Image 1 (tube, one colour):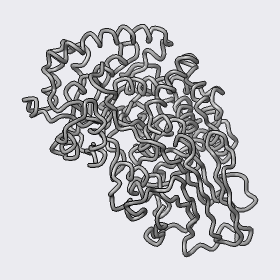
Image 2 (tube, helix red, strand yellow):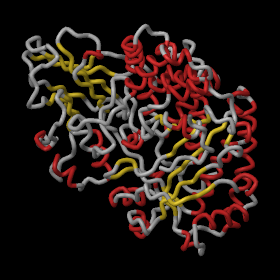
Image 3 (tube, helix red, strand yellow):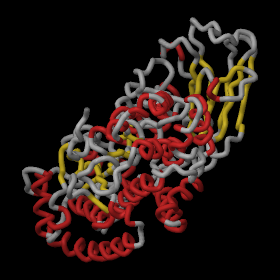
Image 4 (cartoon, rainbow, N blue to C red):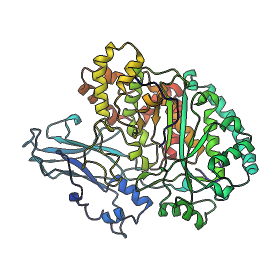
Length: 565
């Protein structure tokens, strides 16, 4: 389906009724907190910025132009001026430790006496760049991370950047007849394959509705003699005879999609096959050179379903955009420039699939929390700690949306509940053990439990449950590869269906880890351990419940191969 080389706004589902260089100056980051926090140098966001814009002033402030950022990361404790050991640990001292996520093994530690000792760790780049460490500042003698004064998750530096998939496919789209001659046969083959594949899936998986939002840069419509991108694609769909499959898809301008940075555009054009002319790089960095769009699948009742050939439709839509000229930018000063989101129906009666009860909704959330860092390793490096799809840590939030990517965390307070998974879970536990028991209907329980959430801009958007009746999976980079988009959709739908029982398939035991605990603190202890010890093998085992072991492993391996490490 793909010609050439490899590869903001919510989905409009019907609304539901709602009853190495010098150390950065720490004095440049004034703290409004009364507690210590952990600082990494260089920060992960700075590494991403240096990869796409090595001459950016923020990068040059850390490392001289002739120097590269160090591969290892230094983690240190920053103490506020007003700190006096208010929690009672005035003389026992402190321990700064780093444990590797996936095994829980102790990677490094440092100890110091007094109320505010100077502690520092150095973590290696490590392996393929997908390593993640949980660093915690604990009172000496403490063993539970719940007692930590500060926690920071630190990613290893990526060992490479792959930009071949980002190249603009064309600036001179071929005639529609040529595109149709290539698309239609390829789509017929894909449709037959996906129909046979779907027939082997459980009925509940085949019938669950979902939607896609794909953000991209595209060739402006005036280069193809059309007034709008929508009219151009409508003409292409009609000429190719694909109206029955794509006529209800929509294309809208999305100003949140950022153009390429100059260095990234030049790198993408240099590796294009055949090499792209300099004009392409010039257009890719200008807002008027390319059009920022969001391609959306139809809302219910025409939403995508695996049993309706949806995976072939996703591949076809991406292929059609490629033929008309598109690109998927990586990241810039504001973070990820474009994303791929998938909404999976969980509570909308107009969408396909059995509706999830409150306990099942919490089970999916707990499972996602457990596999948070595993899922992040399946996406490109720049979305793993991005503010548009912020990680949900069982130890609490570590930065806010207003933080610049290269200056995240610690030095400013977060709004209440924002990205705060522990606060959401504690509230859910309290409600479940209290007033939810007296509520007569499942709808009332869902409304009460999800009235306050960690917010929309998290890796899993829980806020969408009450707004659109969906769970929105936000952590995937934008892509021009139909296979990558197809795999993400299958992953999200399968994850919901596999995680909803919460009957012991996960280490964290889904909702049981939360709701059956005697106290919120006990529940959080279980979930923090489950998140620390989560592995890719565990994720495969979870998905195997609905896909089978072979298909689940193949899916996860395909996503990992497409990620950037």
